[in-house]
Image (cartoon, rainbow, N blue to C red; front, side):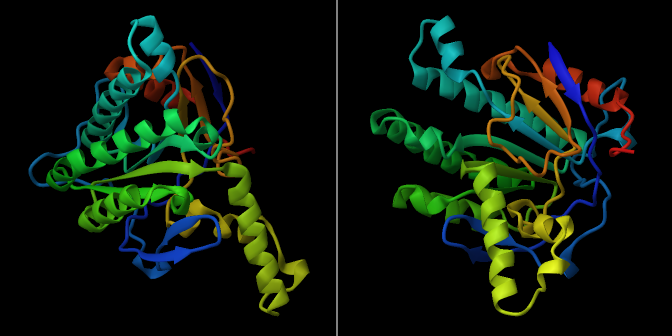
Length: 290
């Protein structure tokens, strides 16, 4: 097991009611700032938040991001088809999602498909997108029952129309849920996220709204998809399968995030591994670059 720790501010949790904004490439959910809620844990009267033994409630990350890597390698190791590996990965996600809900983690973001992934052969990509849509439909009732909100991040315009319709239905159905926000990044690029932020600021300069000398890191940060969706930056990033890189995922937003790398393949990632990552996270002093 390998991990690298930096540190990240832990801002308030933002789970307000959205309206939609579209750009040329990325589609975001945008939240009115006055809808932001405080930073307390989300609980339901039916099932209070549980803090696992050995962890401290006040040190739990508000936002956990995951690069779910190793599905195909897991399938090969089991002499199964790649699709079987992705189905096993979906089961692992369901388990991790439920644990995050129980333990009071407010945002779980998973990197499902990068822009590079969608450049793979159509014969490989189309079945995966079909499975993705089916899984979302299958889990809407669960998300409603468990007070989980689904948000999609990325350029959905490149996705099949049938999948876009499933996404819209799932997001609209769960938009008022508030215990946990599941964010799925699909056709997302960290580099393009920064490019579109710069383009937006340039347009404001052209319109005379902003002077060039007024541009700073806070202005750029506020134009990135994370803030446009009203979400805090990740406190903890987990990447499975032994790869030690971030692969064009949240290149700006990970500046002060704790990074945890494990050799465990994603379909094998379960409660013990998540607990281990959280223990490592809580053992790190978070100095935010100071």
